[in-house]
Image (cartoon, rainbow, N blue to C red; front, side, top):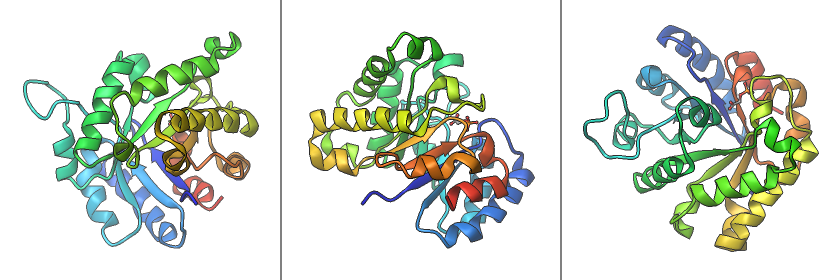
Length: 248
Ligand code: PGA
């Protein structure tokens, strides 16, 4: 049985006081559920959020990292720095990073390898654009991105990985993939893992859906057989909405 994992991706939102307000509302409720609850915060609030969630079941996530250990990379944050802050998860290859910051599949791969090496759990995002979906290229694109992201990642390394299938056209748009469509793509990603890593790993890796997940569609999405969780953007910024999703 894969343990469901619901992660909030706060993106570029929340000052320290706002972040603390949100996480303090989330943590008690999160203690009552068996669902794994993660908050992926901006770097600037991580250390304060870490203190606030001390003793609770909420896990700490970041939204990005660099693939080098250290050096002349102005403005970047390393895996060591995240480990030092007590971070558990790091989102890698979010479509906004791919789209606005030119992250390629190769960069995503380097980051995934570094995260695993340093003992961070990467939440690796894949997903097609609207144009690709309309051209029936969804499965090809997802295959390309998935195989590229995990190039040279061993069976052992895969045990730390979470994958998030996020169709780009569903992110922040209010449009969601139908839960059946999302499940079909996610089952396909699992079959790719099975081909490469065998049945045991493919049955173990958790695969989330992301893209306009909200209280009104969370139950349906989470009831699908292959969907193990959600990566939640907009609806993770309000405690009430996020908790309704956590308690799907
Ligand atoms: P959304 O974002 O829930 O606001 O669509 C999801 C994401 O980008 O991870």
